[in-house]
Image (cartoon, rainbow, N blue to C red; front, side, top):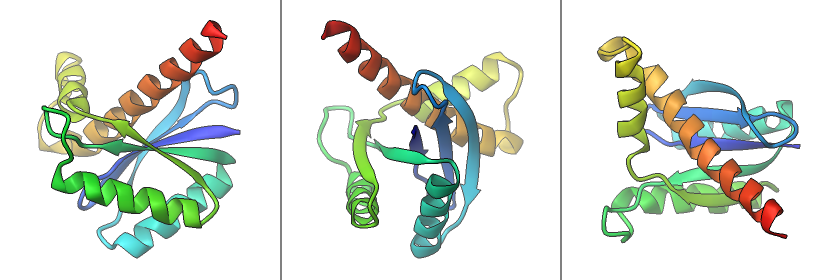
Amino acid sequence: MRIMALDLGDSRTGVAVSDISEILCGEAFVIHEKKRKELIEKIVSQCQEKEVSRVVIGNPLNMDGSKSPRSETSERLAHTLERRGLEAVLWDERRTSVSAAEILHSSGRHGRKNRDNVDAVAASLILEGYLAKLNYEKREK
């Protein structure tokens, strides 16, 4: 099975999906959807299509580690996906969008045209962090 990571936004959600071995990010893209119900349906559909077993949802905590208002949105999505039969995990995503923008800027890609790329790269960073944790835990056993 694969793992999917989400970087939630108001109108764009970055998505990254691992390879079958759950070691690398296999693909990254953006779902354009403002309506929460339709977004959930698109996420569930992508999970079925790509054989995803677990969804890692970026949790935008405040810099001091406390919950932000947007954290509640991530928590609600996690509960909804669990009710739909998917395993959902919240993952600290502080600074992922900033890091994604820096990565793209350093490669010469910046500006308004790159919003989709920032969201997809941010989802990739969330996924990479989570996969690194899983692989570390496997090595420690």
